[in-house]
Length: 150
Image (tube, rainbow, N blue to C red; front, top):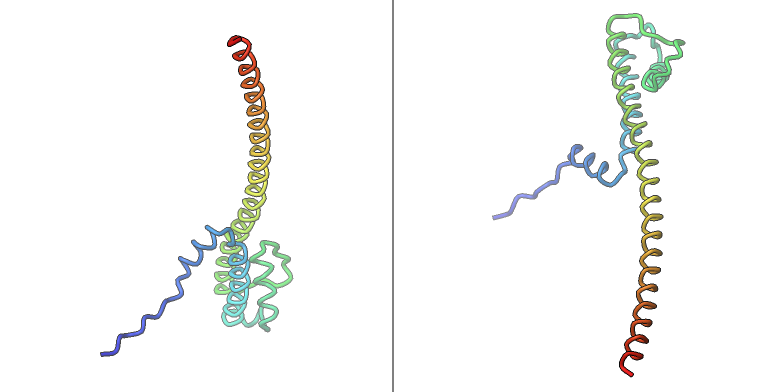
């Protein structure tokens, strides 16, 4: 009897956890932001054809809105266009916050690693100095013992 093939599913949750653990979440967030801009552009082109006559204009608006810049050169005027715009704004603020936090954490962790390496060097130098002092004391004690033995 043939055994069924097991197909591994692509689990975004696991991928994101691995990315966070390996400190490689920035590319995922950037790619997701780009994908959201493309998707939002498509949706707003469909629901508000008057204000977004071309897909390029819609993607431009989505990128500007996701980035929380909001130039105002292209804006939705229909109810559904504004609904899509509201969702894009909330998602944009959230993703920009995550991107900012990720970059900040990279800088902070790099600084912490540098401080830890510097502290280890200082500790190693102090340990070497202490060991040298102990060797000198041991040598002096040996000299004193040999004088006492005479």
